[in-house]
Image (tube, rainbow, N blue to C red; front, side, top):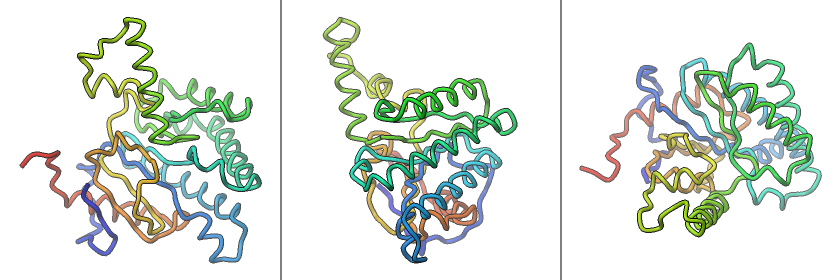
Length: 248
């Protein structure tokens, strides 16, 4: 998997006629951003939510087809209850605002992950968002919520095994494309570029199947400070790569 560090970029000049089709972002660094400012971690999540809103809007403006963000992982339930509650409160606030603005912004929204542990109110908001936006054209924003790559693969494997047991699938003729239909991301092309702010150099259980041939870009910038200029740097680095997908 090719890796990018910020210092390796030859230029931040972007060719907007050759954008990646799908960008995925691990929105990391909210807690450290808050700590540096002597603020509670919840303040970092609030700042990060505003950054997400700004970046998602900008991705639509420049004509990106898909943006997928890691909002809350299957492991994030281990965090303090106050912090989890604050994150869910921010999600509720965002969805309520998004529903009110959807006819204006026309951003299609989807959710990857197991939504069953969420409150009935949040699940209903997610479903309303899906229903309202499903006919929109242009940028689709996928929010990974209670999502984990290993959990996704296990669920896909169990669903496929069930179909085989019921005679709906043939285990002797499984293809990668067919298995992809059992994942949360079915119907969505794999990400071309995965971005991780905050200086961490790992995937953290994010889109494990889908990122097999993605280009990776890592930066020390914390997520709340991630701007459209930082996005330009990541895209410029991507555009200087030669993608061979295992070929010559």
